[in-house]
Image 1 (cartoon, rainbow, N blue to C red):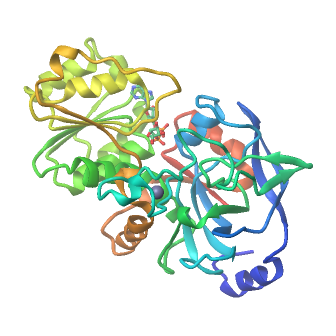
Image 2: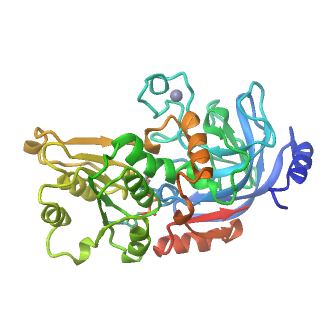
Image 3: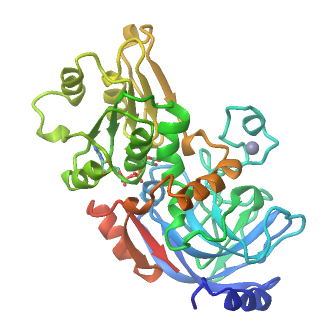
Length: 387
Ligand code: APR
Ligand code: ZN
């Protein structure tokens, strides 16, 4: 059934509201063990929203969880970069109604916690990452499979035909949004574009380096370009990413594996003094240090966007911290998600941001394994799963 067809959607909403829905979802039973199963999805409780998914991107953070690189409870339903249509709402939900187009938000905005109340904070205390419980805020799950409790992930679990999400982790978006593409504005776009435009505030004429040219790295490139950066250096070990990067505005591509010196030394030589802005979008301590070492000693800004494995440590030359460089981390571009993500969708619809180049593949949900194979082979920027 086409979800663009509102009549069909409304009928389906009337048929299912208040009932348990049985549908297909991907379940990770343990690390590296993913299969598509029939699951039962409970109706939303107070403050919750049940969503019929239309599309979900595959992000490296999903892969990170699936490989067991961070502590989570299995079995779980992965996925966080999702777009869908509200099927039903729980008591007290006011910001969305059945039939609304929405994006799921891996970082919610509760508007009550210390992060949400601070003008600059966005890492909401009601999130379910770092640390992750895999449960809704009331300590229970909305999913079961073969009688067994299935955990949520990122508070979103978008690799499912239906999911239940807290209202604080749902953004209502413009009715004109194309639901087969817009999911990337739930994670890759705010994470990358926002890191450059909103967090680093890249300046016109500046020199930037980006480590990692995946979906997030290329969204950073888009943000640097939109901010008027004059030189954008892209670093990746997979040269298949270079044509995509150049098309978006990367001026110099470096493969560290083909260099005779450490990449930071090469960047220093290329720029003479170091870069104005360095971004790490891989999630490895080594590349974080390299990004820091690329920065101009007195005014360079290094922004960490990548998610490092559990218990990894970052080691910096302590004598050179005093020189004036800035090191900062940022999640989802530092945006207060419910306030800002709908605006990014509107900016896209007004041709201010172009998400097209980030989506290299679209596959039906049942081809999830093929989508992960393409991702692991380094052939995709974003592969979007269609429900
Ligand atoms: N040096 C350079 N490039 C590397 C290295 C390395 N040692 N290791 C991996 N890469 C490249 C990969 O070839 C790939 O192109 O980094 C890129 C990462 O891209 P994706 O796997 O598509 O990841 P993406 O979804 O873009 O996320 C990047 O941002 O938000 C975080 O959790 C996310 O840590 C992840 C990072
Ligand atoms: Zn909050």
